[in-house]
Image 1: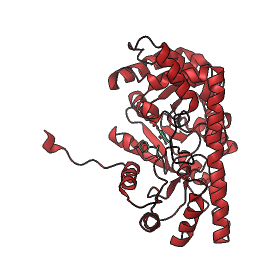
Image 2: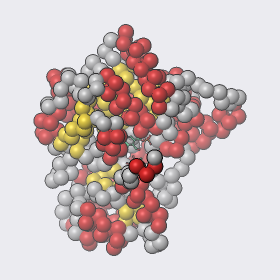
Image 3: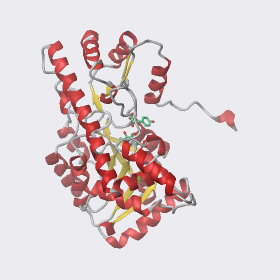
Image 4: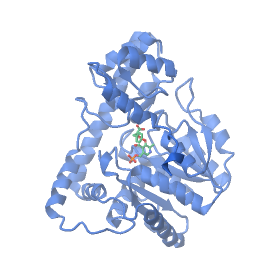
Length: 394
Ligand code: PLP
Ligand code: TYF
């Protein structure tokens, strides 16, 4: 049977990671895959996570199965982190998933289960895996305008015009904060307009939140998801712990499904647990457990928040430094958007040829769509990047 298989398209971001590894040049700069790196280029295990893991190792006396939904304490802790008290707990069904990707995948499957001809509206551009999973599942993808190539901000007029075409039961996929790959985000007034539009069209928001705490702060980054979830009748939320807890390889995420009517929660919970069972049975527990320990222990939580804040402010500092270096070198404000963007990424809005030139002539690796990972920089590499950007003519 294997002879019928054909090559599958590779993931461009992961491919780039490989190319970077194979590049022998000294001083090469990796601004590709979205993994946080500190000033020394390391992706550390966060202090509170390490402490929780130590405690877990000492105290855990069984690795027997949890439940299909994972540990309910994880769901409670994460619901609290993402939604606070914006939505009544009794209206929320939730299951642990293998990473945010597991939550995204199951949210799509849930949507298709509910409506076999569901369409999913995604921003242009969006995280490539959104589109590839949707295509794999045979779900119709509709793009809505998002990134404005001129201003490098959001083309909000275009976005609203396109989202007005969504119908009842269609899914509108939104990034809760720190848009990947552009770094351009809506303000709260614009979010309110999106909410009004969702309610007018009867389309259902699905919020992917993978960078809470990387933008303007833990609470600030959750403001949009809280606004949406508390203002619409139904909502799906896929939350990832990979970045903000630094537990990438543990595969830790949560899928939430919110109904206006609490009597629907039991059915929703059963459906989510069913989807877990069909796909992989019990979700991974280690990452979820240490995240729960961190969130529920005041001292660990305070330390985690402090470290996350260091991560966030260091990225903001690098943004400021890069924007001002580029202002100095270009003698213009045209790179000001880098300081306005939030999260790990900024899209420069440069052609694939110039991105390739950066890689070939300067050993600077960014994704082909000109997305750069701000955390891949440090104080020393910022001026090198800025000079290269000007030199290749971006
Ligand atoms: N959604 C977005 C927008 C992302 O950038 C990521 C990236 O890592 C994820 C979801 C899922 O992450 P993970 O599956 O590693 O938790
Ligand atoms: O966009 C990124 O770089 C991160 C990490 O298949 C990532 O979200 C990249 C590609 C992929 C899975 C995760």
